[in-house]
Length: 436
Image (cartoon, rainbow, N blue to C red; front, side, top):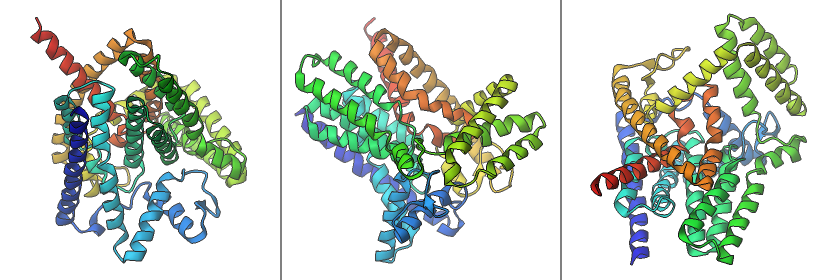
């Protein structure tokens, strides 16, 4: 009976949230036609160009070479939607948004599964996690955004849920689904190098708490998922190694370190000339054949800046981390109409507006409480070394959040877990007070 109820809720959650995504799209189309949305700015083109190249030449190319800057996961998705649009004659952006509405809705039942399986929550508490995710605008506000963040987060969360289902049902098929989804997620955004360590600690903590640790089949599943995902998360680096002889998933990491964080530090110190001189040297190393040298040079220059100006570097790291952590996901709605809560963009493309600012104040207060209570849950987890290590390895990639201001999308993959920890700890606090 419990499994039937669980399956019922998972299916119901999916279709209800899918309907919500569709309604959101219709509301946006009612407010303004597609061509007035601010969808073309930012990184959209860097995903679209390799997708078009793949359809035309069969290669995810950049300047005629296999793309070493973007991983292929999101361009592959875009290539599929572009092909569907070509065959059906439907506006390609509508096809992308419809496909994203379908796919991103999968995140919600996955959250329900993780809440009930990993956190051991009851149905009501798990539904509260889903409801809070919707309230925060996570996933729903990303449906009309042509960027990789939501696809990465959805695939990762679904992969985590499949791994838990594999252990609960002693199923190799669910284990294979876990492998496929985590591998694909790593090819959407290459930030899962530590994930296999986080997952194996999480899985072992779960089976020990459930009394399954002595079952041979369960142990084999844990080892299988650990070893295979260990290889799977390295496939973006393997692709660049095959094509360019460099074992690195992308050039973006070094770009974030120098062209964003170090640039901000140098600009603050009035050394923009130094930045421009370094940029000229980097441009002399253009091309795929100089990829390794370019990455090494950027990292070396960035570390030199950090060494010379540690306080300024720490200040920017802290500032960007805070801003990215408190920005509301509903800023995506205002961004489409060129409005922001924070401050005018330097190029004037997006302007500050009072309505998003006032709404942002509410979410800043809300997230302050969420992080405080989730931190309490993290501190409690130190009693279980496997849980603590799992959380530690899982949040390591969030360190890149401090390199520049990209907003709430930087934390989308992490937020459902923070909200689940928040609800879980609230339930524990409530039960403690009720039992007194």
